[in-house]
Image 1: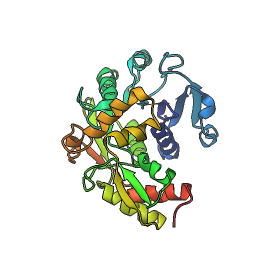
Image 2: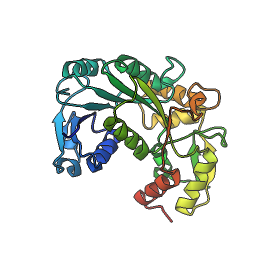
Image 3: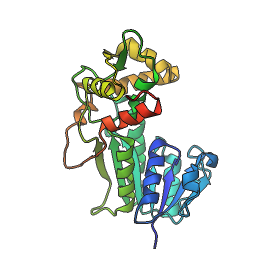
Length: 289
């Protein structure tokens, strides 16, 4: 019998990638994607016989139907309504996408929401896997979107410039989600795994890869303090900035998130190199050499 998997919210970047991999899996699972707006479901998914897009809302619990689901992927930072729906539906396996350092209840900024979600959902079903992801490689897309200026300059928040972070691609996170949804836990949960990229990257590495991708020599600026706040103001509401600043500071030397960068027996290491992601971004924005 085909495994029945529900992905919620299906419109997130990780949700999309997990669905893509699940639909291509030889395990041939049936996928239910829950969307606030089902028109956001990509045609490549809705045309697949094993995919069904349904309307649902995490905030109100409306449409959170997990019936017949063997496993659920949850990739959002609110949990109370989801726990109730899981309990009603008798789901056996839950995969929660969380953030590195989420076992802390302070000093991690925006990741603190993951802490509360993990705490609420860790015993909601018999098998729970909590995936603590580090920063995504795709977060640095802004380097290809912003004017280089004169002299040509790119900015990075990773400081000092030789400090390295095991940044991971969305594709690798999606693959770990997919594999976890299809695999039974060998021992009672919750299981907590860290997800890293194949190696760690510094701001110097980012500059070098940008130069290789674009065939442009650029200077490297470090966005910190007020400069970083000014950058966040372009993309975030003002009330969110303190939590994002604390998350970034926690990801740098001495921070609680940075203390988790060591690989251990509970670390899954991905395969996608950041240069590959940069080349894709260079093609997307027409600046590849």
